[in-house]
Amino acid sequence: MWTVKKIKELFEMDVHELGMIANGMNDNKVMFVINRHINYTNVCISKCPLCAFWKDNGYLMSKKDILQKVDEAIQRGATELHIVGSHNPEVTVEYFEDIFSEIKRRYPNVVIKALTATEIHFLAKKEKCSVREILSRLKDAGLQMLPGGGAEILCNDIRRIICPNKAKAEEWLNVMKIAHEIGLKSNATILFGHIEDYRHRAIHLYKLWKLQEKTKGFVSLIPLVFHPENTQLKRMGLVKEKTNPVDILKTIAVARIVLNNFRSVRAYWVGLGEKLTQVALNYGANDVDGTIMEERVTHSAGANSPTYMTIERIIKLIISVGKIPVQRDSFCNVIRFFS
Image 1: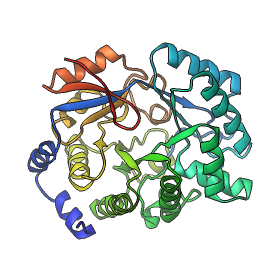
Image 2: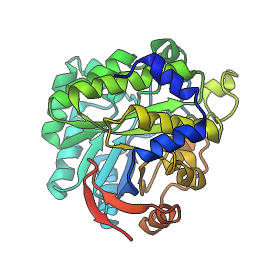
Image 3: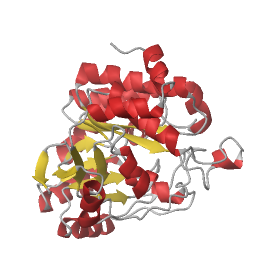
Image 4: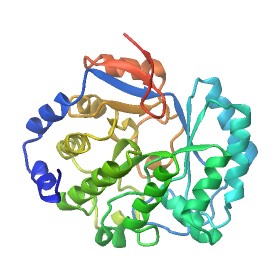
């Protein structure tokens, strides 16, 4: 049984000791998925101080634009579409129903993983209906999974500063709970390395572990390193630079140890860069996410990683640290092994 105190004590341990424990919890396989990110809009009324992606006068993709990106992704072998955006008051639930149902009509086997819990919460408020109704309608249109974004740190004293105008901690958790109840799986994230401390990270991981014990609906945790460039938090002087590699590896290792009820903990190469991703594969991470194909959110905050990684490059990255590459689907089921 985890407690916040026990998790916080893990963060105070030596990073290499944590790495050995976390690495021992995984086998020698490292997973990846062939996926594409589609950021359908960047117009956002929440204007979070942590975010460099939002714009007052940005873009909203048409159905035609999105379907073109989907077509390209399928031609490259994608099995997953990761569709997220922002809190755009012009977007309706019908916009997503129309797009999701058309994607499923064309490509019934591709997994639609779309809309963070905060986007769902925003949509429910905007449409003046329940979260359950929004999720049920989207599921009927083809939605199969929620990504893990919007979790940031699940402590409202931190959220009041870094994302004051979007879903509170309990609202994010409630969206996930309802999604799991109606048969939608989801991922979860933790955004770290800004104004939070170890206690806040411990509370966050504890809340995820506890909900997973109840619902069994989470698949993967994606630890996200906060990139401060072009954010209000940096302009306000609250965060000067990205956290260090030791802190990153420690957080990944602690997450693997605590969330033993999640199928994977990812080394998200977009935020880590390739070298640190490789190191993280010996510190508890057993997944490198995927090909991505086009990522805009982390890059708008200063990430200098590529926006796309080929399957060949992913395989080489995994093999070169003595691990076995495994292509997975969105739910961590094995599609094929590489040697």
